[in-house]
Image 1: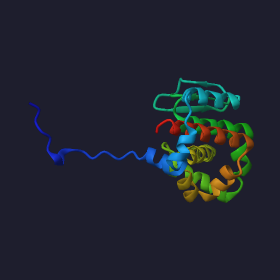
Image 2: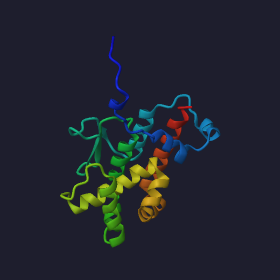
Image 3: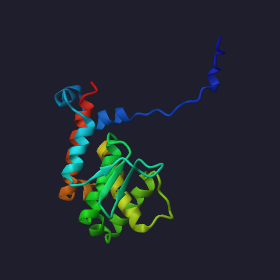
Image 4: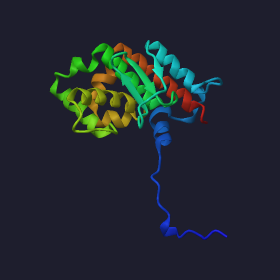
Length: 193
């Protein structure tokens, strides 16, 4: 016989409410979700198509402890899991940024630069005061794009200037990325009902 566990000794695990947030902020009601269902939807294939549309290459070989890496010299990315929508969006946003000078074109605006740094410190999981200034700005940009995809209302409320600057008025290549990733998220969630 297994001894019964004392109720007090059970650890409370944090609740993962991502799916609830996705459905509230993106998908809406069941009728909308029904119209998005696709019989032959394959997440990995859809993501590979987006990577190809951005004329970028990817590999699965990432640095230890990382889910994704952007290589500025080649403008290619490494993704641990091709099905990781957040990481793919983040790394492809770096491609858009570096290839088109998105952050560089706005970094002289002190309000935008300050907000990009704030985004870096508040939502980048590996934020460090030791990181170079330019990297903080670029990571802030990629984090806004990544998190806006999954939590648009929250990010718009928390970072209105960045959303207005980089999401509402994006570079055409970022607009393409955002539209494609939004479509993928909608199709993916349409399959879950």
